[in-house]
Each structure stands twice: as structure tokens, then as C-alpha cells.
Length: 84
Length: 234
Image (cartoon, rainbow over the protein chains, first blue to last red):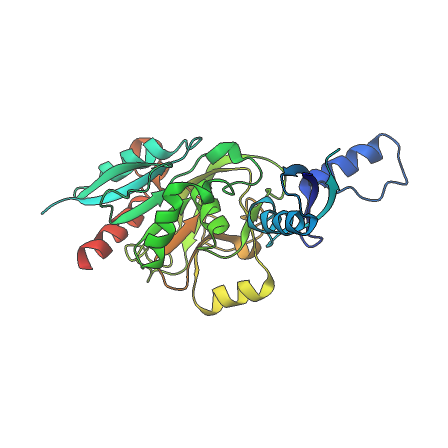
């Protein structure tokens, strides 16, 4: 059964997220005084045609490191779900 | 003597490829040769330029997809052998994504896409790309980017400084490195860096757009002249 890797890529905390800042200011302007911060990341769904979960996990890790994120400024995490 | 061939890589979305071709062709002794991203043949080029633009639409991250194109596998090999590779703007982003240079470029500090003249200073004039400059030269060279905010972990910055790998810095008109003269928020006002080996240079400003009087500046020309001199001498 194939798996879907639901991959999140986020900017590292030390990197200024100018998009997130703009959104944060907009939310505050809308009157949401309790909003403290907003940070924008990417969400990527990749379907992997592998029967073995461990193998699918290995591929999800590898593609996240190799292409989907830039380790100099981003972190990634993912969840793996069997395709129904 | 035969012309020196300079390869200009064309990715889908490159938009300074023809400016670069035009600038290279304006030097006696240099001849541009265009290299399509899907090819593996460097066509005898003795130096390679990765031009500016939006390779692959800048999808995912600027330069991230171009880095895996067929031609880049050859360019990476070419660079590792010590041949000159120059990345301008998006080309700089591709070099960072390729790991040929260290660090990353993120969104400009003030969120704007910047298209304007900047002042930069060549702070290392002993590289193969900068011998025709002097360290107190204040150059006028345009930038045009949305993601030119150079970042690297502090240990990388220290190492770049220790090995004189910072080549260009943004300055004011008097040549002072100030925060007000920093257009995009780059650490240490970094506008361009070179690899440790000294053959791969990446910079955000566009020397090819400062190579003709009509365009307002000739300050990009010494970069190409330095490269030409280097190739003739090697």
C-alpha cells in the first residue's frame, strides 16, 4: 500500500520571517490583540509507492533533506499515512 | 589566438542570460556559448556563468530545483576541478543550493523586491574575479532581487572572514559599510562570496548590467576583465 508523506518545512527560529511578520501585523490590525506571532512555512504532500513503511520513511527523510528543505535555514518534519 | 569560451547556462526562467551573453561578447577575446539546462555538454567552455532570473519559477526555494538539472552536474564537477564559475543573483542562489558556496539567501529584510543601483566595494582584490579592482573602489552596480538576504551560521561567517572569502560588501557612496547601506539585511553587508579554493564566486549585484556606458555604469567590466586575464594566464 502506498504512503502519503505530509511534510512540513519551517524557517529556523533564528531566521527573520518577513512574511510571518506581515501576517502577524495584519492580525493585530484586525484586533486580535492576543496574537503574539505568526510564522509561515510550507506544507508538501508526497505520495510514495512503497509497500514497506520503513522504506517510505527513509525516502521521506531523504527527499526532505536533499530537496524539500534547505538545512541552512529550515527545519522539516513529516507524518506518514497509508493511502486509503 | 582563439577566443576564450564562456559558458552561460540557460535554465527555464533565466532572464539575464542574454544580458550576460551580450556583456561577455563585448570583450575582445571572450566569446559566450549558451548551455541549455538539459544538456550535459559544457561545449569547451573555460569558465561558466550562472545568470540571474527565476530558474524553474523560483518554485520551492530560489535555485533549489536548478541545482539538480543535468547541466549543473557538469558545472559542479567543473567547479570541483578548479575552473572558474560565476553565479550572478539567481546564479548565486543556485551555487548556494549546490553546496559550492556556503550559506543561504532568504527574503529581503523589508519584504520588497529591490531593483536599484547599489554601491558595493570589492573587499578582496586578489581573487581571480577581482584583480582589476582596487579595495577602495566604490562600485555602482544594480541589484534586482527579492531574496538576497545573505545568512550563514556564525561559524561559517567567521570562517569566511578568516579565509578572506567575502569579496563584495554593500556600502554607502563613500565606501563605508553601514547598516543604512545594506539593502536587504545581509549579514555583514555581504554582497558576494567566493569558495575556499578561490574559483567559485557568487554575488547578488549584476555586473553584466553595469558593463555599458548607456546603462549608467561600467563598474562591472573589471570583473570580466579579471576573469579573462586569469584564463589567459592559466
